[in-house]
Amino acid sequence: ETKVWGKDPDSPHGKVELKKKVTLLRGISIIIGTIIGAGIFISPKGILKNSGSVGISLVVWIACGVLSLFGALSYAELGTSIKKSGGHYTYILEAFGPQMAFIRLWADIIAIRPAGLAVISLAFGQYILEPIFMPCGVPEIAIKLATSIGITSVMYLNSMSTSWTNRIQIFLTFCKLLAVATIVVPGLYMLFKGETRNFENAFEGSNIKLSGLPLAFYSGMYAYSGWFYLNFVTEEVENPEKTVPLAICISIAIVTSCYVLTNVAYYTVMSAEELLASQSVAVTFAEKTMGNFSVAVPVFVALSCFGTMNGYCVGHSRMFYVASREGHLPEVLSMIHVRRHTPLAAVIILYPMTVFQLFVGDIYSLLNFMSFLRWLFIGVAVLGLIYMRYTRPDMPRPFKVPLFIPAIFSLTCFFMVFLSLYSDPVNTGIGFAISLTGIPAYYIFIVFDRRPKWLQKNSLNRSVQIVLEVIPAEH
Image 1 (cartoon, helix red, strand yellow):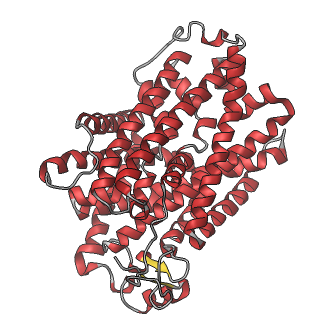
Image 2: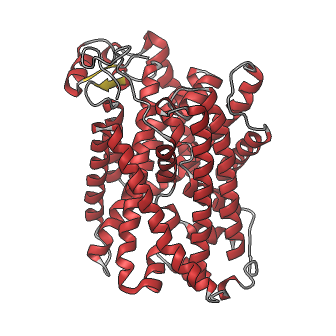
Image 3: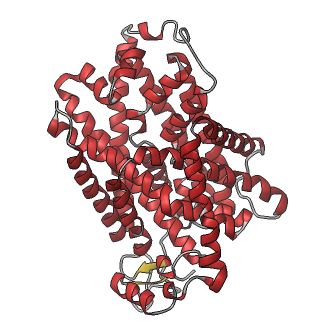
């Protein structure tokens, strides 16, 4: 436990700070728990539609796993050489300076994070209510109410205790792997019994169009996204030089195996046509293989989404915490609750924006143009790794990757981004415009007068501090 001055006689420095509570197992559970969300249970359809055949779609799943590993290894080097929490924001700040980092942060707070959290929470709301309303559809307002309750409980949990957040994340990770197992085991059992007709001529009928491939990769990379979440909590990791790379490699290997085996199971039971016609692939699969037991699958998927929501909160509260410490956000966001040692203000900042976006409307188009921004900035962060190899050669790098790995990864990111400019110019343009508003915001809030006075040392900041019971952390 972290010690508070005057509260704990064992305290060597009397510091209030975030504790080093993330072990290897917790690190793996943060990554797997955040990656395996609703993606694998819903998104195989997008990949199959855009790749054109069963064989090519499996190749895309494996390729996305390898690409994610390349990105994750690059982040392992960044995370072990820059031992600050904050993920993408911190790496862009270190490589390209405060203005670029602020633009990333601005796009994050206004759109990327609330939209991402709202989408995964909507999937949670849909699946948790499905067994109650089966076989009818779930009313829209019921989904939004269940979603709001889900978001509120995740925020509450993250505000109360870091230890409990981590424990629940480990439990939910096992639930996810169990959900995957309930699909993989019966699917492989039928495959070994000789159900291979959907794999015969797997590459035939491949009406593959080059313009479809980036879209297939978008769906795949979305299902894998989350490999960077451990980097948001680097300061809380025990022995980060060893734990970060190890946790990343183990997690990606497990997730890639799960995803490929799950798809093999789907194709064993369903033909490509049936899969494309399905509203929710996992539920259709369960109805075909498990009969009455199929009610359990939506419950597992809902728990899986809840784990992703939890991982999301852990990661983003830490990024806002670090940005506030750097002077890019109001000071109160880098303060820690005096008894619970959680970055309380940084956790709840996303709450109003997320609930607002949840009720305002079309989350999916929002996510479309935000995924463009997300890959643009991840590409920039990995480019920063290559840039710092030349500008800061003396920087200690306990874990070092061959340069071709970040090079291939950042090129793929930029390739996907530019192709999406071509295939969906409207949404991408809006995303681009949103990030550009970060430039005037940077000058108004940061450069002139070093943030507005009302956000700073005055009574407002003090009032928020008293209400939330937070105090500045020591570094």
